[in-house]
Length: 169
Image (cartoon, rainbow, N blue to C red):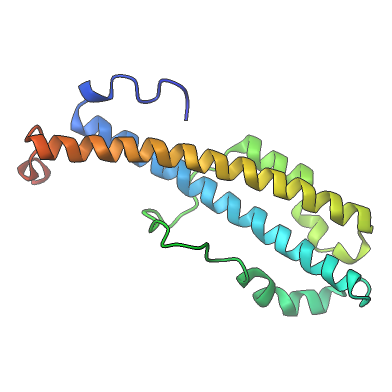
């Protein structure tokens, strides 16, 4: 979120606070979706590394595809309760972060993972780990914004500045 995104928050109308909360929710949903894509690609590459390290050589694409449900389900749930998604769609994705993901390992390279050199797989893993840290940091920042916006809404209801009646048509 841009610096100053919450400047003057206390003076905004309740509708404006809710609009900003919805915007921040869309950003968080997009970041969450992108983070899962990053983690999925990393999980696939780590599975390939494991096969190579265990002496099974390069995987063939057919066996990799058969193993995808197991590979991609290993890290789906983070520890803790987390937050329930408010949106089901991925939201708007940050084009810069998408470009960085494609620069690390294009999706098309996963279809030919068996032809990648060990050094390419290792390099892509390192790049994905760093990118995941960046996206996670941005998500934490968005959560801080969401928390401030939600706290402001709760404060207004608590002080009587906003009422449930204002929600009715």
